[in-house]
Length: 386
Length: 235
Figure 1: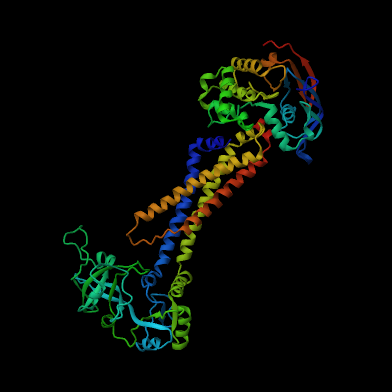
Figure 2: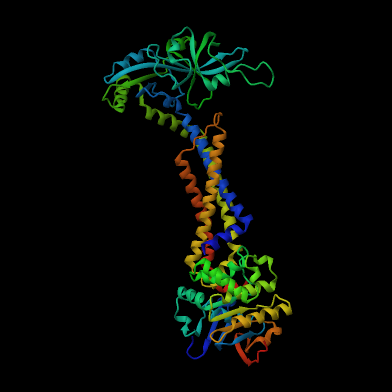
């Protein structure tokens, strides 16, 4: 009987494909939009992820997220170092500065100034050169995406590819000479500006003259010291904000969730995918059942029990649901694969697969439920009137 | 088999549809016996209750009052699940519009009653092939219903109705959508293949061209059987 159910389903090619297309579209939209949302939200704290060494981040209490820099006085570094349980504490400069390119254009860059002595907070991966090259005169390290896009030189011939910025070339940052000594790879951040690493002292010379230039103090807890407890002590001892890396990531993430339109925009797209999928699949499945009502009635008259008919409809729903889910999720994954290496934020995590699977399950359940109710209530005697 | 040679016995059967001002009494105390080995035709004007009568006799519609006994089983005492199982094992159906599932082949359509009874697919298809050969469609096993003529489709429906050897076959207007020659051919196939000493056929029809195939004709009017005429079946 289950083979009959499948043949009834697949025999009507138009409706069968319509059903699968509806569910595929829903799964695709839900998966793709959720993945882009997750990718974007991951970028809100990717810089914190890249800096794996510090246990605690110290900053101005008014800071709301990683890019919301409110500088501190350099003396705060000394105060933090005085807190019990601090293994080491180093300064970090983070700021948006203007870089002048070879063709005279300006480009805003995200400059990170690392502790001169230890260079703690450097990029996770060096592609060319080494981190210690930052100790050279006027040295900077540029991220690969920035070097090959916004900081790249214009091609000599129209239509040709831009020429990536290379080691040995010179930029001007706030009218100060900066020599590229390395190319690194960093995680993409919410801001898409090129990332430039240099030493803390050089970064403060690039930055406009201000009384306060220290963006963050990066702290390592001594062996056996709980980072959370240490953060509490730093807060109490200095009056500054101190977060573990996890807490700082949550702070940044929550800021974007609460203070931007990103969640609502993506939420609407995901909901739209769900509703459209429900409408298309539900209506098509119900129509499919209505058109086959005569045959369901015939089967019922010939002795098919309601339980078997129910299982036949559930099987039909499961098949279109599984196919639609597979194609939709596969399409979204392919989309993500094709868009790799671009600015698009796309992160497909298992939770999204579960979410999309759950949504498709709800859609096919609702669709099948309508059909099941119709068939269960069907009087077999109706076959003589059809 | 029924002990007294009666396949179906209806005594004082009533059936009403709707309620209040929309209430329609379709059966007003029907008394009728259908014997084993006979082909009984139910005839009468539209709306006289013919279809309702075969529906209650075939256990696909519940009657209100009266007694219906089919092969010594009182339908009133059976649950819906029991009726469903009873139909699957004992009753075959032939419909005016054939009701063949268009996405299944002729052989698969014919095998459905056996699959409902839980027979293995290969066995069911083999048996379907035998029955289709008996109705002259051995070369159409793999065809789809849409590729067949009306007469051929009705022969498939007959094959489907008899494939599991039911003891009662009910037919609703089996020839009304067919021309005279095809109608006679279908009735010939039906009588030759479906009728046997341990089986009864009830056919609802308006088609007086096929009355000669009946053993008895029960005339209905306004929800009652008003006359039962014996016939000498000519085919």
